[in-house]
Length: 602
Image (cartoon, rainbow, N blue to C red; front, top):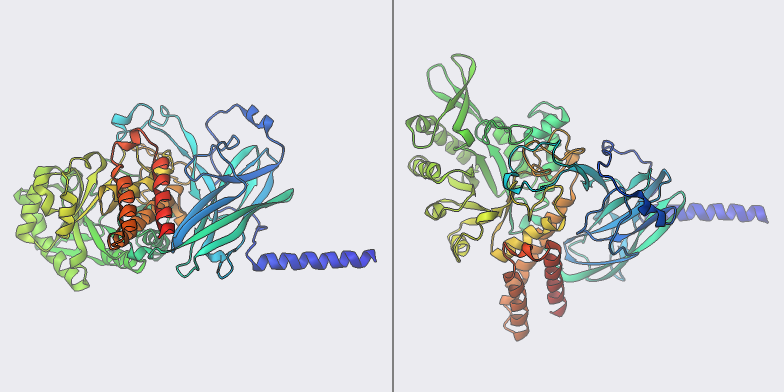
């Protein structure tokens, strides 16, 4: 009888294993990480904090707004269960914290299908990523010179979680904390209602179940391709070739670019970053990999010019195939240091010359190119969406350029990131204001530009302590960027750079010139980051605000008018001084609650 009981138990165990496999548990995957080993923690802690922790493995949900040191137990409000909410079509994030007193044990994290009475959210809509730590730095007291050289020996290094690994398994080798990022992409056709599921933390020594409740509200967020938010994150394809050790513009290179561009399109990216010349940002190594020209300029033996657009065409076509189709920004007719490079057929050598807008040398150089480029773009069907793009140029240089373009190639639009000059306002199709100048534009400027068909965004950069998306910035600041755009009426946001990687971005986010993480938001292999996902979350909030404002404005009821006033009053309280008195997390969480209540009250 005992023998048959054993057989029955084995059959039952096998059946349970099969059921778990069917419903999406893949918890016993062998752990083989594709990421390099993490750096050692350079900070020192009083490890006696572990003395009060019960031996073994522990887990619970923490806040996506907080930072979790690697070597000590988590602090703050840790809960065994979590409730989240979102619209149909929205991406929702949460974070599970796992901490261990150290047993050298493999730990797996799984989320069972979320289901309601009438609908189930399948596992292909759910992503689990063990978060990885990288080296970062900080501002200290050097805020006024934060854009200059940075001495790694003088600025203390720290560990910060940022990489989303694509892995659901890790090894607890010593006492420490490991955050796990969980993403739920709510299907657009999901039935509104309450969905129940659970996150399971499993290991050889035991397991724990953490209930998850998802409320799907009866509102639809359109797909990213239909978002109005004008997102412009500058791409660096040259870093991808260098980091992966492949030939620039080879078949392998283009294959590596696809997932990076696809992830960018999935965040609603509108602009393709293209280069007309070598080193549009100068010779001073603005990033580890110089931007090179996507167009080959050749001066023939007879003095005429030849322009090879084959690489430009392939890159633009690839970006469009990946979903980035609205605008091609071409850098730059006014590069830093005003140096231009071409191949001289007669000497079979590279020529570098210096030419300034407004001079005969400059105009002679561009008078041949612009008509030829215009004809090529027209043939490709891209002329209407192409801009001549500039970055932080002086007013006199821009005035000279604009006059020259109006005379030579008036069909070209201008994109400009920099400081606001009233005299140039109407000449710039796509203007992105430096954060520090967002308050300089007079009331009504953005609305007037929008009515004229012009775009207005803003950007943050190396000298702006907050809000920002450095690897040492608090995560909620990346989400706040979308809220600030909505509050101030901007059409979107610009950031250099999407993937200008330092030498080894998966180990060390620091670079010799800029605050850590300033040069990139995404990792090799198209691995996302906490910063990128929170930024995307803020863009979703921007779209939700836009949708609700339109609906409430079109509703004649007193209730709708009151809700619209409530939302607008809250947004009106946000300006570029508010972070002096409130945290980004306080602001965005209050705003999210208002949006949630408006939808539920309708």
